[in-house]
Image (cartoon, rainbow, N blue to C red; front, top):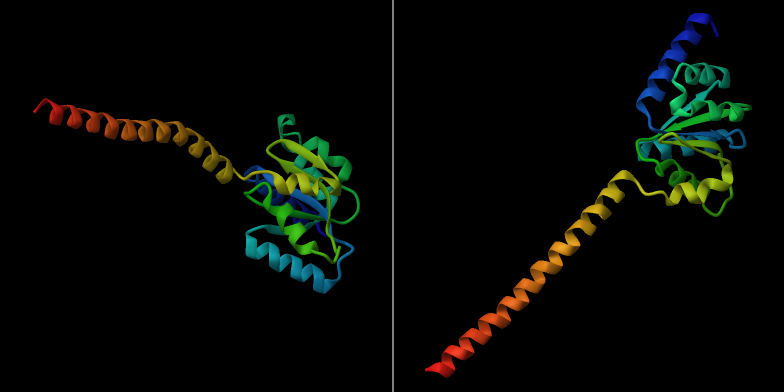
Length: 176
């Protein structure tokens, strides 16, 4: 690879890392060509970008960012074949990997996952990563929790209002 090509790839990776808050580094070297094509297709269908990357170029791209991003923690896993999975949803790549593995045990192994400055290491983190809630799920839960007290108050007012109205009507009928 020529120096100009490397520079171009590094700048492209910088842009990806700048815009991505979630990405996974995996090892898919154990997959056959047919399996990797199937995995790529599954990722594409779910909106996950898959990129086979050269470790040294990834590290150079990551080194250009400030220390507060915690990218330096990823340098140790940049050995051997690496595949980059980039997604807007933190748990989606983990769910896709679990789905792909199924009962066959075929696997792209997770080297590390970067989720909003938190770094998860190792394939044993797959279940934990898949259980993470997406931003949309968390917002839905918060809205549900915020609506719950209001619904209870409205329900109490409605039921109490019927009772009070019934009592007033009964007292009016007695008075006549």
